[in-house]
Length: 255
Ligand SMILES: [Zn+2]
Ligand SMILES: [Zn+2]
Image 1 (tube, rainbow, N blue to C red):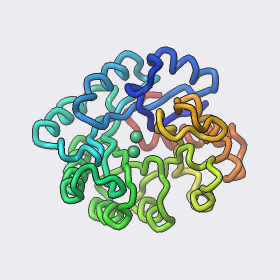
Image 2 (cartoon, rainbow, N blue to C red):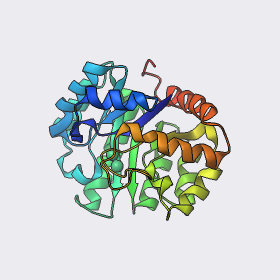
Image 3 (cartoon, rainbow, N blue to C red):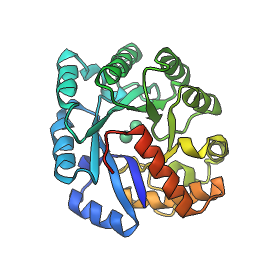
């Protein structure tokens, strides 16, 4: 049984019912659909509400869209956070690769959402690309006050350490199956099993052997297989451990 901790169901062509049927065939029984942009919050919530607890949801403003984060958006997230199916804040973070929002604006939105997550008592899902030092600094600043995970981790060992040091989890996407991802495979060897998670980030980043196709939660099973072999554990043992990890990071989710 697998849990996809980061997917974007409102971006998929298939309706959630079809996605769940296909996922169930690959033993993917639960997933978290992620809010990125205020304009999609209603859709994300509707999908989760209709299928909870199979599908849980998070709300947050992606670094690309940090320029849209303001008091009104924060109030919306705060008012929805108590709903049973909202189990986290995300995705939030920093992306200096694209810089779709100005870096100063990204840092401000990231910090404010870390603090909001503290005050509503929910874990965060963090996106970090080409922004390692600033991400690590924010993690350090909030040490002991936030819980969370690094989504689609593809950073350096230094960033992995910084995240582990503050008690965060490292979530591995299909990137781990790519030929050129040896660095990531080496890092995963050093991450304790009780701090790992897996995700698709669908519709992006389909794993080998599905590369070129649009990603979907069912494909997380391929990522699981590779993680199990890197960690030298059976798929069954990995699945039991990952479920424990999900339950401890997302205590609100009754799975
Ligand atoms: Zn992301
Ligand atoms: Zn994402």
